[in-house]
Length: 407
Length: 135
Image 1: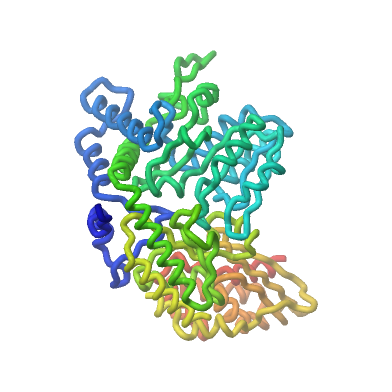
Image 2: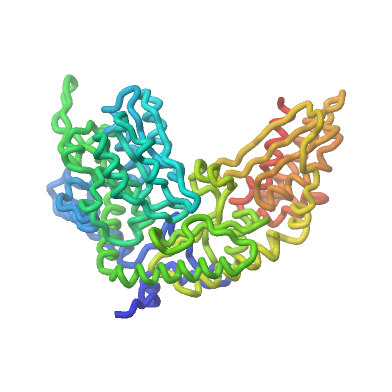
């Protein structure tokens, strides 16, 4: 069946809103994707028919809220390809999920142990590990990047050592769109008994995933980048690891038994969900996963990468542009960074805004990568299923104007 | 609309690079970053015996608004002391909040009042100068 982008687009109410008198060309999906009516409806239905706290009440609304919340966990687990929903922990977002692992799993690290990240990580996959290293005396090491903006897995053999305990990497770069060679990372980790955490923030918006096949140990992602609400994300972890980890935060729901002398912890996932969770957003995230699972991702992928090629070709045809990241479509997802000679990325983004084009500009919370590339920042366009050729063409028109105006 | 934000005077100021460079013998200097966008301004000044700015030079790694701001600030700052620079800061703040149209080249920044997220781009050189004057 032919992919019908117009039908997809109609499911997103935001596109009814003009921007600066123009049609909205939303290409800032890597920062936050838009949300479909199905997700909005799921949240509204919870708020209007089933709003109550979860796991505490015996009344009808509490039962309904708990069922919706736990069904959302099942939806996320199905999306991730895992059979045990209990391995899915709802968090405040991807950042919280990574911090959870850094704090909780990190308690087993000792002085002299090593944590491996890369030079292209988002700050959210650097700072928690830096903090852990500071706390316990571990050493934080960085895998280098290749000239085309990929994590250089060829360097694993020299960076990963028998002291490596954790390897934490972006599944997809939020700047270059490069897809990680996960198998190489997992093999290197297994050879020294380390665990692998992937930051999946930029991967999850592009379709269901098979975590068991990937062979990693932890996987973190955010709801708002995956067509879901803000304030919700998820951590998946291997049950055997999670069972052995101490809590991240203390509070209600995460305990087995509390006395002033001794406290025992609830089993996973409760142990890591202290206090009242973000119930509505979790329900919305479950709906977002269902929405994504209903799409034909072969068709969506072809569509997204077709637009990526159109954008890359268009940029290549404009003098003064420079693509930052892989030159082709192999081993990448539709996150496209570029610079314009003589034009600051913020000025590019501001001009694009006047064309109704929303992009991200700046260092993208990846300052080590910018330092490595010797750039102040880039302009980044990131593509979602609802984007169309008109979005790409509007960006290319705005890029031309930015160059005429500033260069 | 951005075409209004980037009026010709802003673009001309940014391209003028007025004051761009370094000083042979600065008496004070400072660097300020905008952690949200990564922009950076280095300012060097030479003060005279009365504590007035005799020379000012800047290096801007930033957007057109930041470059234009540094260019507009340079001639306005020469000959003034810290108290008078504070007055200039109040003037640009009033322009950026729409309370005043501003004088001279500061008036070119009036459209920024409609773009709250860009105000820090304009004030970053002022922040760097204040830090340099504070030693």
